[in-house]
Image (cartoon, rainbow, N blue to C red; front, top):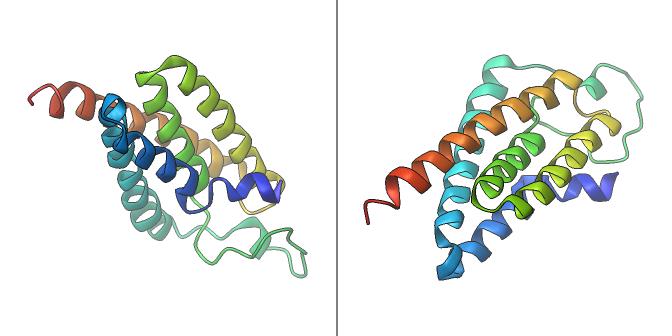
Length: 151
């Protein structure tokens, strides 16, 4: 589980996918949507919601609990790993169903890893899923229907 959760750390995997897509002219529109979605993830999830809700992590509430990963220093709600994963999966699904299904499976596994590792409550992950699908849908709409069709 620690190795699975690393895939979602700092959105690294999803940022790498976005960069690869941005470099390929055939898929640049999907890369733009992913970049837009992931930037939204940082702003909405990490900068606004985590600080506004200020929910402690479950591992902070139990003294002496030995974590399998480094103890996170930011707040718990929503799960940023799950949020970024579901934003990316939704955008990829809207662009290419096969890519999206694979991404949804990976995003779900990463979200589960956050529960398994005791760094998030179930509602943190659930909020990441719901917000991720909403933000991913909006980013897809903006990028695919509005921005790129005007060029």
